[in-house]
Each structure stands twice: as C-alpha cells, then as structure tokens.
Image (cartoon, rainbow, N blue to C red; front, side, top):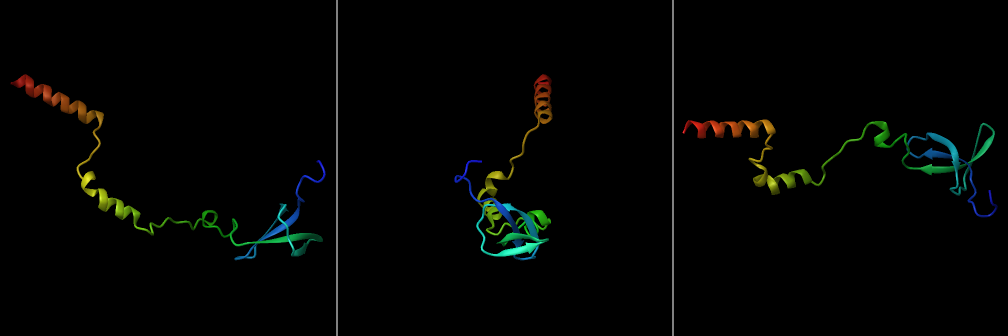
Length: 106
C-alpha cells in the first residue's frame, strides 16, 4: 500500500449500548477508549443499534400504519373501487358464448 493516502485501519471492538454485546473487528473509526481482550488492546466504539438489538435481525419487526394511510386511502377512493372486479379470460369467453347463443335464438 502507498504510505500516507490510506486511513489508519486498526482492530476495534463495537459494543452494543443496550445489551453490552461486543463485536471484534477492524475499522478506520477513530477511538479514544481502549479495552484489552485476550491480551490484545482494542479501540472501543459504542453503538446504539447492532444486529443483536435491531428488530429486523431479532425477528421482532412489525409494520404499523401510524398515520392511518390505508384508512385514508380507502376513505378517499372507496366509491371508485366498489364494483371494480377484474375480468378473467374464462368469464370473457363465456360472456361472448352467451351473447352468440342469444343472437342465434332470435
């Protein structure tokens, strides 16, 4: 590597502020706190959310419609949606057959 153009890449320990779980890795983030683990000195980076506490990774994620957007949509467009059904090919073909039979009977 060329000297002087790359950031200082050093071993650090990321600490989850909620659970205290520690993740040892390397980073360029500057640190002031130090911690010795297994005889190796690591810089300490404190994080509020990690994979240990994030709802997506813990399986406790849920979606909440806090602004009532779905209800607002339904209220605004309910009159336009009421009888709108998608026609299938079978229904369209059957309707055409029924019309041809009626015209043949006349």
